[in-house]
Each structure stands twice: as structure tokens, then as C-alpha cells.
Length: 607
Image (tube, rainbow, N blue to C red; front, side):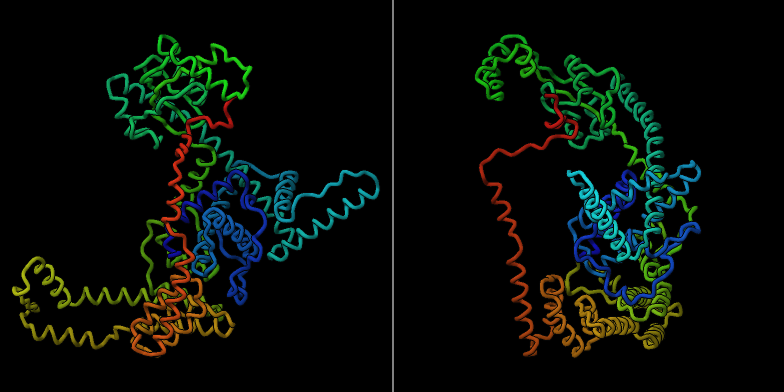
């Protein structure tokens, strides 16, 4: 479940997070680490590498990678509301973080070309901002005199010591940290320069597109059709660009000025620019403050304005009354602009995809996983060779034999290998192919008219073909890779158990694969053991229940199943009933309309 969620959302979050880096500097945006956050326990036993990765020959020290990764992880958790507290999720995000470092290095390379540097004042400012987030703001006293000054100096010293101690706990010396901040400042300045250049160029292109759209309307193309096809305002596209009836003071000033100046049916002669981009505006209808309808509604308008002011002595002016009455029904086609941040993201993304930069992952765990997931992390690449993936994990295990999660990952590769082998055997088996064909041909046919299919070799010798296929099948153990997977999973569990790090995530693969290999004793023992370490985990408990259900004739198993069902019911009771949430809507209150993005928020309207 968690990996599925990550696959759907992580890419978006990563690029959104990169966008924050481009404006405020990498890793300035989220403050101190959450209380109690610790690196994955298994990493205590890892042999630290001098560098995690290398980009175009530039090394990324593991201390810096780990320090920044934890901040990236916290930002991810804050934005998604998901706690990434298991190994697979953690490794997935660590591998995603690789792209953040690649991004920074490419900005730094561009900075050298542009002679962009960071002075000491900029670096100090960046450090102070980070320090404030981690250990709190500087404590200033309103008192004056020698004593107050002494106390202030002492407080600053204590705050500085606290900050430096924090860095050391995270494995980073102050000098390394200062160099890291310098690079962050340079990245921010470079990305801002690139983004502003591209935004200026983009503005001209967008304005030309908008002007071309006006020409198309003036030469006879229906405005509504063009809006449905080209408008980048998703909320009005399907209505042909209609915004609904709008009063004065509601729209962006530039939009409103142009729209109120039009007559019904008229098209604005030029594109109108707002902070969203360029608008092609057409006025469909207009309600002016004149005539009998206006005069008839005047008393109601006056009462409404007085009620809004909550002042019985207040008397609205004629201009105020007219403004309250006047409204327009405009339609628009929006050609959105892209801000500097977004364009800088696109620039670095293109740089990363052009194939001119060499990225080497030196952390063997990350290297193995990224290779296994290469089609996700590097779209367009070929599927991983599972034999190569096995070699990579074996190399990682050799370097760090006490990391249970490397064995766990190796087990997943062997399971994939088993599935791949089974599919290949099915494709190579002429009898299996014939059965597939027979089933296909028989679709829709009555049961008593099943076709008899005979497969012959080129020589027409059916018996010989059958014999050869049987001999071929006898040579290979269909469960060869599944047995390898079980051994890897068992080793992962053993290492964890030896460390007293009991984890249902390592237990369940052992039980599941043992069950597939008809090893009832191991399957039942491990499923049962996993119960105590799965309390509160619905997915794990469900897997245990489904696995043990096959052995429910056993009295001990039946007893365990009762316990698991009880735990699942308790979890179900804790979940919010969707009908309870829906009941909140049955209040009889009017729904609150959400303001559109092209309308001026109430807080920003001119008073």
C-alpha cells in the first residue's frame, strides 16, 4: 500500500519541494527535526561510505546527504501527512533525494558559468535563519546596563553551543555545515536568475499566443469553442469561459477595468495581463445602474449597505449605490504564465534528462535499489536485469553483512525472478500455449463441445514432443528462485532477531513464501509469531488472517485466528465511519462557495 501511494505522489512532492528550494534555498524551509526522529536502526551497523554519490566527478559526502535527507523526509511527511516509518518507504525517499543533489550540482555548475557567488553576509544570514528554526529565536532583553549585556552574551553563547551540538549529533561539523549553506545560497541565487530570464522570455511568447487567439475570434471562430479547447482556467473551461455575474471590486483590477469598459457581445481588443497570465475577455451581458429596474431595487440596496456598515446614521452615496447594483457577465480564455520558480524547475529537469551528466551512486544499498527501480526513477530506461540486481545486492551484503534489509531486498528480487521464470516457462511450453489457445477458441462454446487439440512437432511426432518437453521440465526446479527468496528472508529475520529488532515486515515474507513452498510448520510458526508485532497494523493482520485461514483445522491456529479477528475488529472500530462525516453536511446551512483564483480575495480588496 505504502509503495503504491509513493509511486502516485512522490514525484509531485519532490518537484514541489525542489521548487521551495529554488526560492528559499535548499533545506531552509522546515526547521528542526521532529522530536524522537532517529535514523533507521539498521543503519547503525552499516559501514559508512566516505561519499554517498558522485555527480560529474563531484562527491557528495554521506554526512551531508544524510543531514539534508532527513529534512527532505520531514518536509515530505509534513506536506502529505504520511509518516514514512518503515524501511521500504524510507529507502524509496532516500533514492528520490538523489535527484535533489543532482539538481543542486547542476545549478552550481551554471553558477560558475555566470560567476555567481555568495558573500559572507549572505551565508551568515542563511545560517542564522536555520539556527532560529532549530534552537529558537535570539533572546533579547529590554533591560540595559552591564548585567543585562552580560546575560545577553551568555544566552547567545548557550544558544550557539546548542546549535553546534545539534549539528554534531547529526554527524555534521560546523565547517561542513557552513560550506553546505554557501552552496545553498548560490543555488538559490542561480535558480532565481535563470527563472527570471526564462519568465521574461516566456511572457513575450504567452502574449503572442493570446493575441493570436483574439485574431482567431475576430475571424469567425466561436469564442466558446476556443475557450473549451485552449483556456487554462480549469474551472471555467467547460462553460465556454463564463465567469458568472460579477460586481465591481471583485475581479483583479486590470481584468475589471477592461471588462466593465466593454459593451455586451464585445471582445477586448488586446490581451489583458493579470498575475495569472493573459486573458482574452468577451462581455456577454451587462447590468447598468439606470432605468426603472435600478430605481425599483434602490431601497433594497440602501438597506443592505446600511446593514453592512452597522451604522444607523450612515447614508450611502449615489456612487456607492450604483457600484453595488452594476454587474457584468464576462467570459475569458486564460493563457497562464509560469513564474520564475516553476521555470527554474523545468530548466533543471531538462538538464537532468539530457544524458550529458554522469551520476554515480556509491552507497551500495541505494545503488542496488535505484537499479531495481530504474524505470521509476529514470523513465525511458530498460527494465532491470534481475540477475544484475542480484549481483548488486550480493555485493552490498558482502560490504555490510549485518544489514537485514539488504537480505530482505534480495528476497524480493528472487521472488520477481521466480515470477519471471514462471512466465517464461509458460511461454516456452507448447502444451500450455495450446491450452491457452483451446480456452480462447472455446469461449462462448457449450461445455459439451470442447475441442481436442493435438500439438505436433515439425516432424509430426506428437509423442516425441511430449517426451522432450517433459525432460526439459524435469531438469529445472520450478521453485528454485522461491527457495532462494525464502533463504534470504530467513536470514533477514535472523539478523533482526539477533539484534532484538522484531519486525512483522520481515516475518511475513518468510511465512508467505514458506506457505507457497508447502512448508506448513514454518508458515504457521512465523504467521503466529508476527501477530504480537502487528498490533495496530491492519494490512499485516489481514495478511496473517488470510495466511492462517488455510490451516484453521488446527486447534492452535484456530485460537490464533480468533485473536487476530478481535484485533481487526478493534481497528475497524477506531476508523471513522464515512456516514458520520456525511452527517455533518445535513445541517441545513447554505454551502460556502469557494472563491475562484481569478477573483480578488476578500482580505486583499480595497477598503
